[in-house]
Image (cartoon, rainbow, N blue to C red; front, side):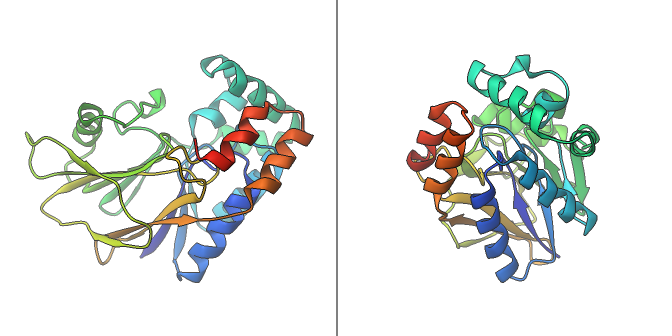
Length: 249
């Protein structure tokens, strides 16, 4: 089973379509969307509709903190993100809002666990950016889970653990280079953001996990971010959301 893992689309239709096209050309068997379908961008309706179609075809879809903010309470977000959450809520239909509201926080797939933030208190959306938080996430997972994959931090990174008391060791993956997930280790991956990367590279980020071969490959996919920025400005959303797409931050 080869699964494409995509997260933090953030209503960026152009980046989402580019990553979907690339994944399909790689011959993936299925998709898993790890949350934050909406927020920041100007195409929430089209993105949610596309994800609903993927789910109907068998994809796993999780809830992210921006999805939760749209259907529940936007006050946890920064002022700019809060403004977009309120706007997004007004754009989506009742059916689309109900779809977001029903999304789960985690999902299992064989020896892997999908989550938006951390396996530790997944409803709190912890950012896995430091060794102790990565350690906390892997310790919270069932012992037969060898890989936790998450989004949320908008930067692709892979942590590995060689033992219960070992210090997590992170590294930044290179696009298109397969990494063997050695069965004697446990792994924590943050797969980056499709629609709003924040590592200085504007290309969309996603990963493919081969569960049969115990392998993960990260990809960076360029797209026309100028079109996305133009849509954000035309919708009257905060201009920084448009500017940051070209900067990858």
